[in-house]
Image 1 (cartoon, helix red, strand yellow):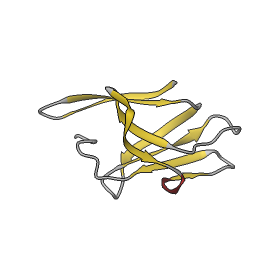
Image 2 (cartoon, helix red, strand yellow; image 1 turned 90 degrees about the vertical axis):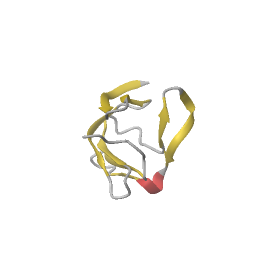
Image 3 (tube, helix red, strand yellow; image 1 turned 135 degrees about the horizontal axis):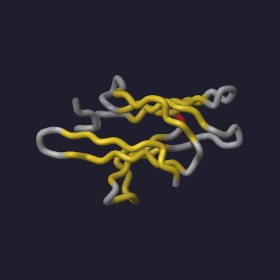
Image 4 (cartoon, helix red, strand yellow; image 1 turned 180 degrees about the horizontal axis):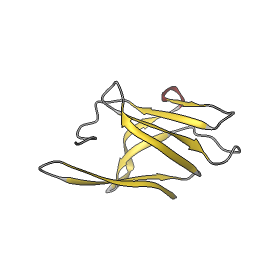
Length: 98
């Protein structure tokens, strides 16, 4: 696994550590809410020899249980530039905090 990014989210009740891990070499350029109250990741694959076929959100304490799993219908990739977008549908409770 490769660490792509790490961050923190908090509200007045809880602090969450957020890690983005990948088995592929990639760069995440943006993480933002999407129209379905979920989350959208955009980025670029670092190699033209591999692509993306699935992505999931899991809790660190239950890595074998998917909170959300997405496949090709929720993913787009430009094979020329290797830029990608992954949309996790929502609502995902408490995923973003200001």
